[in-house]
Amino acid sequence: MAAFMDPTWNGRFSHFHLVSKTDKRSRSVVRVRDIEIGGDEIVVMAGPCAVESERQLLETAEAVAEAGARILRGGAYKPRSSPYAFQGLGLEGLKLLRKARAETGLAIVTEVLSEEDLAQVAEYADLLQVGARSMENYSLLEALGECGRPVLLKRGMVATLEELLGSAQIVAAAGNPHIILCERGIRTFETATRNTLDISAIPVLKTVSHLPVIADPSHAAGVRFLVPILARAAVAVGADGLLVEVHPSPAEALSDGDQSLTFRQFRDMMDDLEPYLAIQQEARQLCPELLAVSGAD
Ligand code: PEP
Ligand code: MN
Image (tube, rainbow, N blue to C red):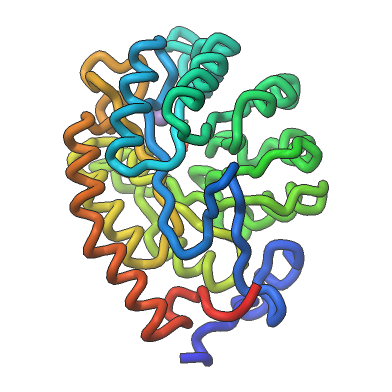
């Protein structure tokens, strides 16, 4: 087994020394308020694609908290491919996220789109999301070095794992080692799904990097019925967490309704995940190398 687990991947990842796995550092835990990501528990982050209204957000926050999510997601600043699409509520959205945190105890993850918004978003969020489209926004990545918040770094839709780790290295080199990597599907020739969930990215990243790795089955699938099954697959291969879109009424969502789960579907997804969580725990115990999570910090 050991022969297959070269943490430098034949030298290819050896130059990202701050985020690469080493003999001394095989695993790091990122703390978001009192929640540990990359530790023993799998952390689920859930909520609407975009914050749309107080009612939409608070109802969703309560529903996902009750089903077992620990972190509420919701975009206040949205990267949209059309200038005519809903762009997010901005500051008002951030204030609603803060209110939802106060009412439910959930931590908050939300996207930061530009350096100009960074100080404001960091004031409200517990975890700063860098979206797929921003993975190569190097000035934003550098600015995140001093933001004082952990970073959720999504893989760009045409980015290799080497490029993803390069972006993580930029954030770490700028002074912020608190980074969580996220596989959210990549562009391939396949069009049946919105993106192709690169399932092998999860064990590869966990082999070469000490950073926690989560999966976003919603943006990978693009259709809600596939989300729970992709979530199970991601957990079975070692994901430290999930990022899932949930909406009170997906048909009326202002963004990503097709891939958003209803409250009921999210609850069922969480219940059905149980055996897969057990598979991951068992695999870690039986064969720590399999999920590349062995060794001390
Ligand atoms: C999102 O999380 O809503 C989002 C825009 O994701 P991505 O950057 O992965 O497309
Ligand atoms: Mn979305």
